[in-house]
Amino acid sequence: MSSQPAYWTVERRRAVVHHLIGLREVGADLRRAIDSLHQGVPEDARKLQDDPETWEWLEARHWIAFVADRNRRSILVTDLESATVE
Image 1: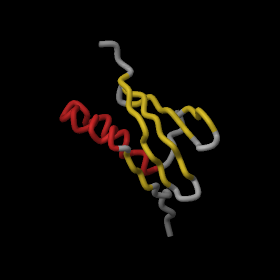
Image 2: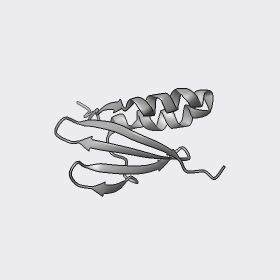
Image 3: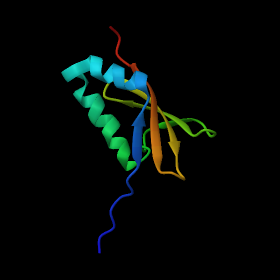
């Protein structure tokens, strides 16, 4: 029997959802990155604080901030910020 990776629930704050909608097709990579959080906290994410367990992750040319609740196996994406200079 093969073991499957643990699945995490991923939620997004309203402002994050609005930001993603505003990006339209340009935000496809960012949406994929956020969807990958169903696999848990990425190895290259940086922990900002312990309580609540808050992280930031540079992916898809954006800083993705999120809070992980390991007991519930859930991640709340709280903020997105472009990492590119415009």
